[in-house]
Image (cartoon, rainbow, N blue to C red; front, side):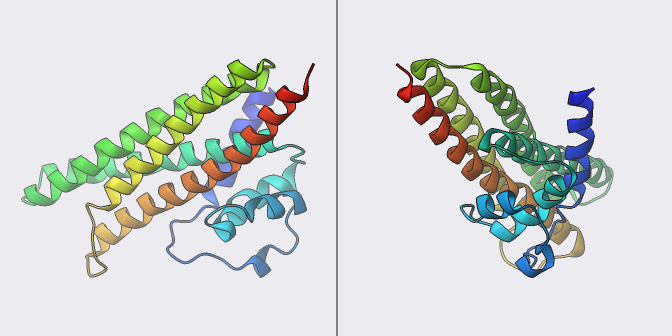
Length: 209
């Protein structure tokens, strides 16, 4: 039941992460959870981080870096899955049209997003294992795995963005670019929040006799 509640909550939070190049103001979230606001300041896109996660903070209390990292990675995965579903639909439509060159571009980008979904899924499973570890060497191993997979997911999303250079593009291209950019940004934020948790976890393990 707890896992189902978390899943539904993550979906609700993820839907608030609009695909936009402009980030919302901190002023719009003045009543958001203070812990989330302070944590988001370490990310590359703090306003987006707060915008995506504040509704979670208003629904329940996040009391640790681990909880925040878990939610942030889950949001990244959901956004990647959402973007993949959209691009699959677009690719099928383009394949049956005469826009063969454009179809290949979308297909190549879709392959990168597919990889991002797989890597984010692996990172979330590894994060759960990390939460159960107490031995420093094992903790470092799990941290390294999560960092590798989340970094790879971010690289794949960035590679996909490279397929859509410049600013003068049609509505469809702009929509795809906006969705993929959103994936890249929330994944970058999730990686920063994970680094904060990983550092605290490793320090705690090394303090134990």
